[in-house]
Length: 95
Image (cartoon, rainbow, N blue to C red; front, side, top):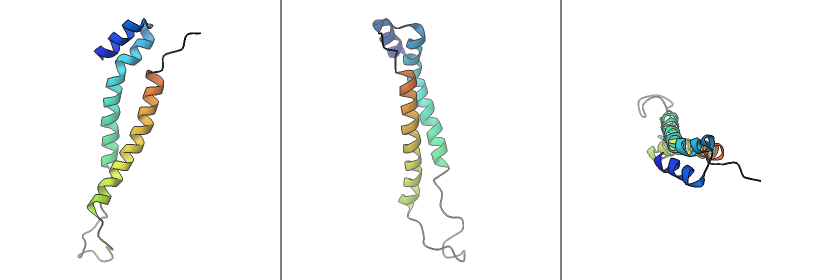
């Protein structure tokens, strides 16, 4: 946040444009917490117990279960980071 403010001052930006550079680190960390929380809900196995529950089927690989949450967080983070960068780090161009 301090670096964003110093960058805005050095570039002579308007206060409303400078605010985007100041808020950017906080928004990225907020996105991180939100995406991680959502992805946690995708890391789960099939209900039941293998060998005890009838019709359970094949046992899932634990790495596949973890990768499912990783892919969800990756996609959400890409879209969220694109949105944040486009709206907060895109100062208006002078004519």
